[in-house]
Length: 310
Image 1 (cartoon, rainbow, N blue to C red):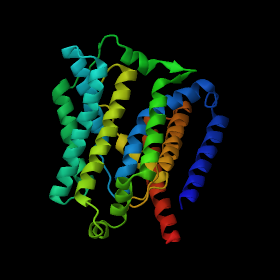
Image 2 (tube, rainbow, N blue to C red):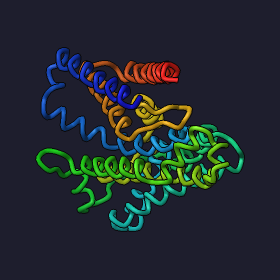
Image 3 (tube, one colour):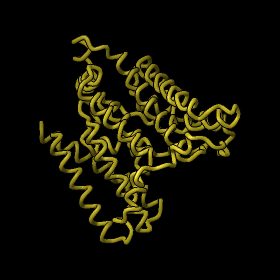
């Protein structure tokens, strides 16, 4: 099943790349490729975290709000306290983890799916960001090696791309080797059966959401390093892109099946489509409509493939 999904994703990437290379003058240019890599970084990190959430049969739609909250918390600390951005980075990640823990505890305590809980908490986190920032962007953060790292490059490749590569490699290894990830998949396949075999379902669900919050916080750190500023409305739609990437890469919305490498292929496909549409001059409204259509199509295709496999 994973091999079929991998072939489908690679075929999709190849086809859309050829399409955009033939219809635009700059898609195949080296500069555009390097820019595309940089654009993928944030979504690769967030979508990797979403892989673990989908593995348990859940979906977290507060990740965009958590990401934006962490960026603004760090930016405000730098601006108003003069704290080093390097010291703010772990604070941002911990803030993301805290938001994830809140999501997980609320979900298991109320016995509600994470998608319902995170729908509510996404508004809470967005509201908290607006209260903290007053609705304004946060900039003028001064100079630091932290920001130099975010904008620097090696052989033309932005340093943050290497951060995303490390995240993917570590996550893929952990998902294959760790007991926790096997239990995530077991919960997604059948939570009751997993509980009867001794899997600490409640604890794992909370840990899973905390992990997702940590990934969102890390994405916030990387974003701040590159942008050196924060906005009060950032991260909108990131959750849908992440879920689409996981499903396009072979993850099942019913749980029990997900792959970090598949997710990487899924996000590459999505970002190539976004990049190509932008180069073609397609308006943002049509780009969003295309993303929504892609989400529906990939879920429908995965359902069909799953039924045939069964």
